[in-house]
Image (tube, rainbow, N blue to C red):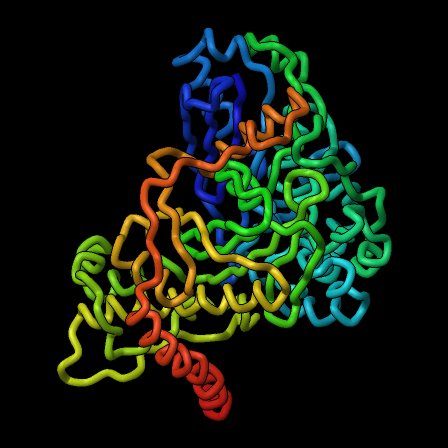
Length: 485
C-alpha cells in the first residue's frame, strides 16, 4: 500500500492505493485562505497538520488493515509558498502563498541583483518564493532576522512527519534559489536575497527517500515507520500521476487557472515568453509549463455577472462550426505566459446589439483556448515539441470546449478513462518509486485513453485568423489603458 498526500490551497487530499495503483480510499480536509490586505494570501501551517491528521484518521478508520500494510508515503503540494522557521522550528508568521502579490516591487530589485534568468531559468515573479523573502527583509526585519530556515509548504508537512528538513527538485525549482540545470542551490541567488545554504533544506529527487515516519506517529497510527518520498510540486506530481515523464506528450489542465505541461530531457528555459522551467520529480528530467491565470475562472466570472450557472453557460455552446463573432481576452487576473503582466485586463471586443449570451460563452471558451495557443507557441520556441496532451480539469468535461481547444492550439487532446490521476495519485506513485527504486513506466504508466479530440481543419483555419486579431488586441488595449492612466 502507498499513501499520497496532496496539500492543496483549498484542502488536503490523502489517497491510498494498492500495489497495482488501484484506489483503496480517499480522504479530504478543507483549508481556508486568509487575505488580511488586498493582494495578500496566507495560510497557517498548523492548519495543514490538523488537516493531514484528519484525513489520515479517516483512512485509518475506514481502511485499518490496508493502512497497517503501508509501505511508503509521498507528498505533493502547492508551490512557491514561504514558511519561515526560527532555530527551534517554530513558525514565525503565516505562510505567504503562491497567489500572494505583495512582493511585486521586489521583483525588479532581485532581477538586478543576480542572474535569476540564467541560473534559475525563470522570470522573477511575485508568485515565486525569493521575492517574498526580500519583502520580509524590508517590511518585517525582525522576523527575517530570526529566520533560521525557509521551507516550502509540503516540506513543512515533511518536517512534521519525519523531523527532517528536506526539499525535492521540482518544488525547489519554484523558489528561484535553485540552479535548475545543476539541480543544486545557487549561492549567488541566495546571497541576492540575504540568505545562505544554511537557511535551505537538504535536496533529494522526488523519487528518493527523504526520511522515515517519526516513531511516535507510527505508533499512534498503528502503521510501520515507512519511508517518505521526496514527492513533487503539484504540477510535477500531477504529471507523475498521468505518466507524463518524457517528451512528446504533455497535459493540459483546464481548471480555475490553466497549465500546459511538457516534460523535457534537458534544461531549456524561455524567459522571454514567461515559460516556467523547472526540474521534474524524477532524476535527469526537467519540465516546462505555460501558465494562464483565468481558464475556467473566465466562465465563472461570466456566470456571476449573468446569473447563469457555469454548466448552463457551457450548455449554450453546442456543436461549434464557426468562431463566435465576439473576441474575448481572458486576462481577468493579469497574465503569466507569455505576457508576464499582472496588470493585464480582460475585454470583450466586437459586441453588437444582436450579441447574445451564447456568443459570449463561446467567446470566453475561445479566448482561453487562444491563451493556451500562446503557451503552445512559447513552449515550441523553447525547443519543446508537443503534439498531444491529456486533457484534465473541470473544463475538460465540456466536449465543445475541447473541440475549440484542439482546433485553436493544434494539439490532439486525449481524454483519459475515468479515474483520479491528480497530484495525490502522483505522490502515491512517487512513494512506490522510493520504496522499490523503480522509476520505469511500470510505476509511472500513462492512463488508457477513452477518446481523442483532434483539430478540425476548417475550424482551425478560422481560429488561425481570429488568433491574429487576438494577438494584436492586447498591446493596443494596454497602450490605451496606459494613456488613460
